[in-house]
Length: 106
Image (cartoon, rainbow, N blue to C red; front, side, top):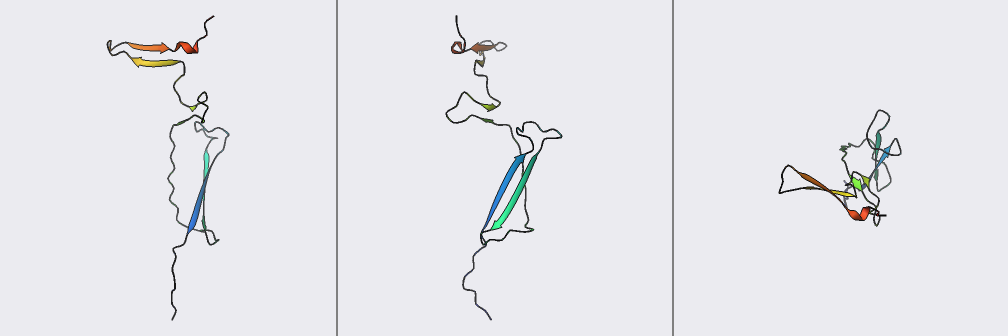
């Protein structure tokens, strides 16, 4: 006979890494792909060998503007020097207006 004093559910840590095969990953071609790796480790010290893993990988279009640097945008962004507006009074006419602050007058 034996007595169980306390049972704790095993605690573990899972880390993942994405690494593109080219410095700038934009549109996939034959030579461009992303390597995804996953590693699980018990907090007691051992690795989670042969553990079941379920992967969900997706991609989506996005844009990025660094903090305090609105003059830099990565990804698709609206052009900074024009705006598009649909003219409601004439349904078949559209209007593009250029902001004059972006033009230098000599």
